[in-house]
Image 1: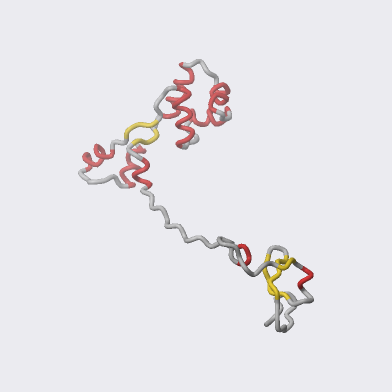
Image 2: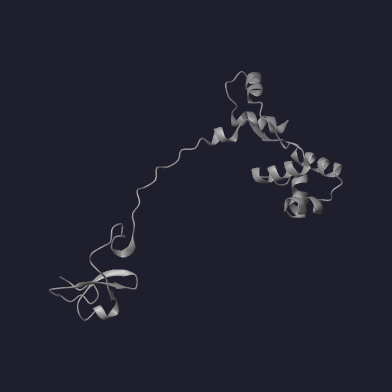
Length: 160
């Protein structure tokens, strides 16, 4: 048997804990660590302290189903601005109310940035306005005689 510390061939090696690793060490190398009991208590971790858990199965998510049938309105910036003005709030005040910077509010109102779902929820709650609207896929598809909307259909609609 080999000493796992110095590599010497030995007839007997003891299990020693050296800096978090369990190694078989000869008598000369045992002083570098602490001898551990070979008998393990019930439920003890395997040598080296590693516990291997069974692999988790991947969770399959339907992202299209989660999106629902609503989407951000095309005129979300105007809706934010008109609701803010109706409440007589400055951009700074609205920003403080929803914990965002004034520049973010300004960019939202000008349509330069598109808010994520978390920010949409904060704005809808603070301003009492709906920024999402029902998607009308069926109507667009019926006009074109198709069963679903294509990317080209969306590009054409944006250009109008």
